[in-house]
Image (cartoon, rainbow over all chains, first blue to last red; front, side, top):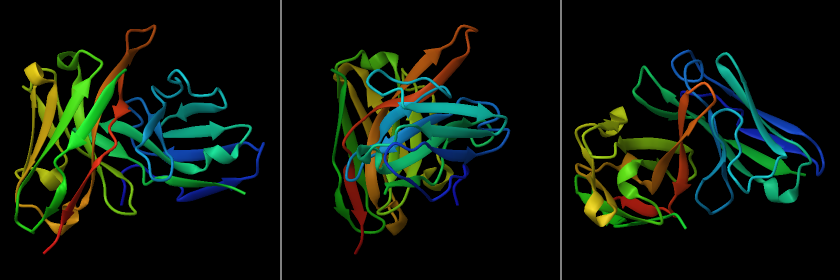
Length: 110
Length: 126
C-alpha cells in the first residue's frame, strides 16, 4: 500500500487530454513539492515534472503539473503514442523522514 | 553529460550480503545529496536511502533500517549501498539517483531525483 494514491490505470486516444491524480496528506503533498516521473517500458524512470509544475529541459509543454492542498495532478495534452508509460508521483514526507511514491499509473494510448 | 552507473547486483541467498556501487560523472558529486531507489519485479518505485553531501546525514526506509548502509566516497565520485541480512522481499532493480534542487522566487527550495542510472538487479533466492 503506497503512501501516495494514484489510479492504477488511465487511457486516452491520440490528441486527447488525460489527467492523473495523486492524493496524499499534510505531511507529504500538503507540505512539500510534488514531482512526477515517467517510466517507459523496460527503462529507468525519468524526471518529468518537479516542484509541482516545472519541466526539465527537453520535456514537452504538453506535460503540466498542478496541486491543491494534499492532492496533485499531472496533465498530458495532445496525447501521443510515445506517452504510453508508467507515471509516478513522489514527495518528501516529513513524518516518515523519507521519500514516498505513488503506486504508479499505467497510461495506455488507445 | 551527467551520468550515474550502478554495478554490483546479482543473485544472493537469503541472509547474505551484497554491496552496490554507483559511479558518478559529469557533475560535482560532492555538492549533491544522492539516493537509492528500488523497484521489485512488476511493482512500483520505492525509495531506499538518502545521503547528504559529506555523508554525515543518512535516511532509510523503515524496512531496511539496521540492514542496509548507504555511504559515499567523494574522492572517487562513488556512492555505495551495503546490503546485509538480505530477504526475498529485497529482490528488485536498484537505481542510483542524484537529488537535484530548485529555488523559486520566494526562496523556497524543492528537491527531486533528477538523474537516474540504468539500475542493477538484485535477486535474493535460495
